Image 1: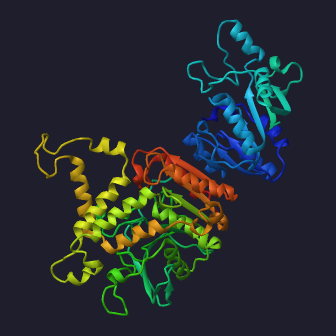
Image 2: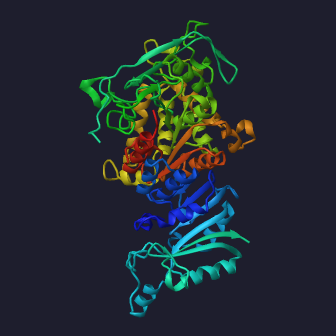
Image 3: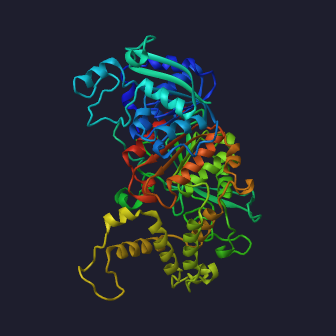
Length: 201
Length: 381
């Protein structure tokens, strides 16, 4: 799993994630890409950070910027990580690339006291319009064609919240964005990205 | 990046220590010599020194060459790593290679004269452990005027030494680079070592390890045993896929001869590797190095708890493994990584896709060398 594609459009979510991280915390970033978020959190929150990343070039990029990186395959789970060994486990714009959705969320909430998850909202209005016009959506946050997308799960804000309710996962906070700006009104329709702070109930 | 270059013509050095060394077994070496080589310059702050530890059959000749007219046969065993413009860049780092205690390339070992008897130690050379090697290397570190290594790096058994440095001298190593290694051998690993030892010890020319005394004119050395030991070892260094690709079922003569001469190419290759090794390596050194491998287990004194064993470490770590290495599989490196995570150490881990099995650590696979370069460039001097 690789998330190199996820941060090409800027880092507006970094600031919001940083607000949920206390200084000096132990943080695990799953699918950490080139390590930009961890480097940002190291600078702004002095975190003790580790990234998990499978793509070799991203692993080298992390090492190059002085970010601890572990070349593990997330599809094989987090079984080697100890319970509650991180204050936060982050998965930024990568959940849609993981096949084992529920297991990975449960593992994040086992290893971390809290998890931070962000994902592109498939229910975003322009996406719905694309479908209505008969084509799969291609947008800033879903930049791939249907045949070359690394994304394997397509879901909306409403889908995600329904899953959390089913799995006994508490949503502690939600932020929704479109074009880098906060969205308050009907996020499932108007937000292109959603960011959550979640916890085991 | 400039075009990578060789460190060029190099020469080994030796240093002798007259202060006795008490080994983990309780045995004492009254004095000992270590052979070593250095490349690059130690900086004024003495903060740029990197120690390269060798594996089972290696030595201190890590980089450069001894003979400008025969570079092919006199180049160091990890030359692709070390030199100007290479990942371990000698324009920046002062690099030291050392032959371990018990070795057969210039450091005190079974072939050396026992001062108590005036004869070669032979089988009387005490068993040495990875811990003992690091004790001896610490003497060399003092001799070179180095307070702390910027990094200690090694593959396989060399990786165990890089790890042990972080445990034995937490204040004297800033970065530990543990490659294609394991925190302890598995039963299968020990089993292969035992086959190798039995091959050597059951050689009629082994003479209980005192074969040097029969070595005056007839060159009676336990070569067939050492050859067999190396053949077995070599199988564990390669991957099944790589063997299939390199040799497959290819035959020397294209048809079956129905005898025991070389028929399949893999037989020819293994015999050649065994012969070459038995010419240059010492059977007693091979025996004791396999025992050093077997004994190594930092968790032994902690009821098998690796987390507790690594609690002493203060260094930052770079750990790497190779996907087709079944001798020390990636899973074994991950054990080290998880124990380091438990202890809050800085650690980066690369799992390199390479088809060359355990020996992958000696190759210059792009992702592998890119990761090494990135890590080494990040070391502050």
